[in-house]
Length: 468
Image (tube, helix red, strand yellow):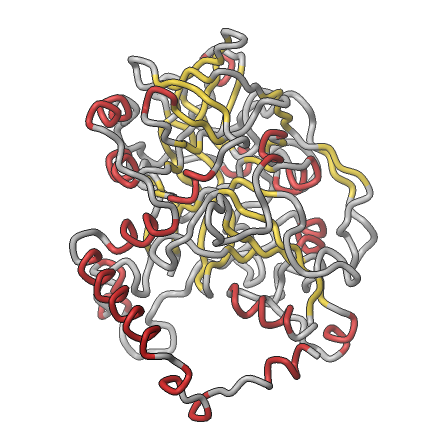
């Protein structure tokens, strides 16, 4: 039925576009395009387009002055001992396997150098086109508050020391994204217009005179031991049992709306809670995961920096790195080595790109191919089998699309038995490829009987770098 429906539409030279348009429609569209072109010539393209997605007036000069208090010097990369920084693969607290572990094609997505297959040295190749225009091919660091260590796949960024008003206790946190383009540019954060639409899923707070956030409420317990028991070999997802390594209370969400800063929304995931500097002073790694987030590889509460492990993924066919910080259900938090954030459960899901949407989609295979030596490796069963991340496919990110949000609506997909038997199962790297496979019936939802679409939970995954 789906294939017949798709074929019923004219395509290519059979489609007479002009005949389908009325004069009024054409004139109106022309006026809109001309107006958009004139406006875009006055603004950076991503700023203009994202403001169309979720229009909001810029913050006042007074509010901007408040937000400038949160600006910190760019953090320098920290050298860590990877072997000492992670407490085991897929079994206990800590991040588990790294994005560049083993260097095998199914688990290390770092692009090969451009001179492969040529007769010239790499020095012959000039700077990638992305250095001139970030939308072109080449690497682009998107979160610009610190340095990325591409050798071990980590980023070191500023650490903040705030407080939770309801308890009076210390909350150590980071900043990754913000809903205002001017503040994003000023602080080196990712800009997400869609974050303006995060309402009941956000905490509230105020920026203090030192630029640190005073959260109204919301705490995290980092003491629980992460534990997950995979299903049988070849069908490791869903797991037999699971426990996340850190658990937020009912009021915890990484998203916070700043009351004294014009209502701007920050992505401010908590790193540690109710501990003093001496308890989390691990500047060279080998951290205590009963005190800090599982993504932490090193933390320096004296120099006020934290080093986080990066996660492999794709966006529109290009490999990317991101950090995984929070999830709205315990199962996702356990698999992702991140914090269960109950307040995130109030995010409006399933309405990607509609008016007022706070989310963007992330596509997660359940039963993809397994094995780090397999270049087609992807999915949750693969993750639970070898401890490496599932090579998820993200929707829009800055420089590739205009609708980025760190609040990712999880769209799980399952290859059908028929598609597997015909040898169609593969690593999918691009959103519309996945949507086409769903339309063609090659993949279903969270199971082979569930419809394709939102799985009903979200993950907070701030984008860090586009690798190509």
